[in-house]
Image (cartoon, rainbow, N blue to C red; front, side):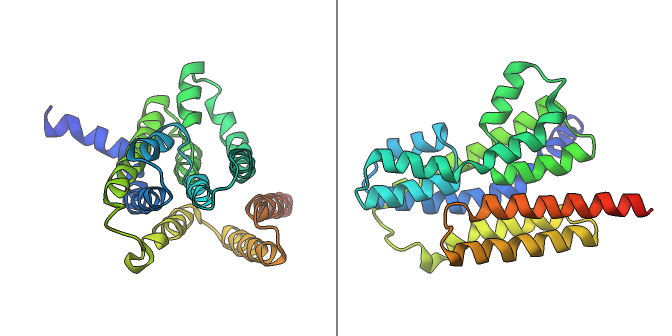
Length: 232
C-alpha cells in the first residue's frame, strides 16, 4: 500500500494515539498487579479482552488479592461501571444510521477515554462507523498488549509506584479533557465537577462520586448554555 493511500487511514485513526500511549503503561501496571494477585497470564489477558474496563479491572484484582467473595467483586465493578449508561446515552443520537452489529461492536469497546475521543469527533460530524470502530479496536489492542507484557513481567516487579505507571491514567484524562475545552463554560463545568467529585470522595461516596459529580456538572453546564442562548 502506497504512502498516499496510507495517509488518510493514519489520519482517521490518529485520535486513538494519545489513548494508546496511556493504555500501554497503565495496562502494564494492571498486568503486574493481576500477576501479584495470583492471576495467570491467560486470566489477566482474558479479562482485558472480555471485560475491558480499566478502573474495574484494577479494582477487581485488588479485591482478588484480598480474597473477597466473587459476588462482591461483581457488584462492586457493576457499580463502578454504571457511568457507562451516561456515556452511552450521550453518544446514542449519533449512531442512529449505523447497523445493529456496528453499534454492538462500537458499544462493547467504549471506555472513558474513547468516549472523550468520540464526543469530540461526533460533534465535528466525524461519526463514520468504520473509523469509529477501528479507533476503539486500536485502543483495546494497546490495553491487551500492555496487560500481557505486565503479566509476563509481574514476577520481576512488585511495586509499580516507583515507575510512576499509576499516573498514566489521570494524565491521559487530563489530556482528553483539554482537547474538549473550547470555551469558558467548559472550564468552569470541569472545575466544578472535579471539586464535587473530590468532596463526595472525602465524604465517603467512594463508588458514586464520579457518577454524581458528572450528572451535577452536566446539568449545570446544560443550564448555563441554555440560559446563554436565551440571552443572545
